[in-house]
Image 1 (cartoon, rainbow, N blue to C red):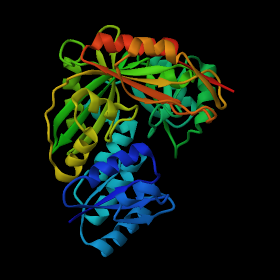
Image 2: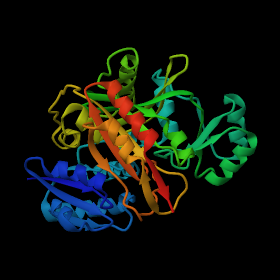
Image 3: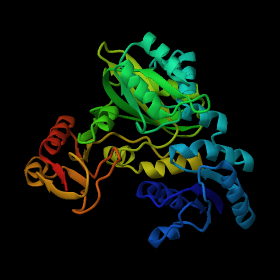
Amino acid sequence: MRNVIFIAPYPLETTYRFVKAVASLSRVRVLGVVAEVPRGPDAGLFHDVVTVSDPMDARQLTEAGHLLARRHGDIHRIVGILEPLQVPIALMREALDVVGTRAAVADLFRDKGRMKDELRRHGLPCARHRMVADLQQAREFAAVAGYPVVIKPAAGMGCKSTWRVTSDEELVLAVAASHISEQRPAIMEEFLVGNEYSLETITIGGEPVFLSASRYLPTPLEVMENPWIQWAVLHPRSIVGPEFDDARDLGVRAVKALGLETGFTHMEWFRRRDGSLAIGEIAARPPGAQIVSCNNYVHDADLHRAWARAVVDDAFDGPWERKYAVGAVFLRGMGAGRVRAIDGLAQAQQHVVGLVVEARLPTVGTISSDSYEGDGCIIVRHPDTDTVRRAINAILNHVRIRYA
């Protein structure tokens, strides 16, 4: 049996989909390192579990890994999907001498400033940026880039703690709220204007073997700035043509420039109004926003298992045909509190009959979520991209969540 350690701090449904994928592989014994002991049917996914008080602490992870190795023998792989874990897991691999991404590469993906420096060194387009440690440095960058600018943590994710700044007064507030310092600098970027997309790859041995793309409607930063906005991710049936051809090449070049050997990547990119491209950022982990699940529906394949096959077996079972267009619509409402009602479902249903493949609706009485994914999600699928786009618009136009 091959011992695979999965760092799964909390019993999240998204994480456990990947745990199940690893557990489904042949000759694999899944060993867990967790902060919360799993309960119920998911507890049976792990052959053995070690708990740690801080799952982001590489020292604690390494001690847990040594303990599991003493109990079960040599460790074949160490994996996990959460972005803040990627550097600690890489350090753990190095300490236990386990195959996989090393800390230098993981940090290059995690530190957005270093990432952009490396991409630019390879001639790849991305937003102008600067690491800033105080208000004066922030003002100097704003003077060069011009407003609006974006300020965010160097190791942020999902637009958390990200500010769009349009004036010096707003800059003063954003710098104060970000608590930046020499020990905790932030990254400032020019604000990219245009359509925003994502591009995913599965890479094995330094070569991308799978590639997919989707478009955000609207951009994630707009969504985070306006908690009431309902939004969608559109996966067109075809990603061949002028909208995506140069972006596919850009994504492959970015993965190679940052030195990833094996794993899943998630790149956010812009097409500016003049048609040029710019990379927002790229992460060495599976994407959120239901993008993996949507790709399952696009390809009639299991991308959770494809990730597991790559990082555990160094293998890929594709390629797969893009059979469908798919849209994921995220439901949110005005205000906050507890979900009081979900309006417009009947009206939307008239436009999406036969198209819904997955729906997660909030339960009345539950507390509203502060996640960018909102309080619910509806996924639609059809072979025709325009049909999916119309279904997305029908859901966005009719469905509303009310809070009390």
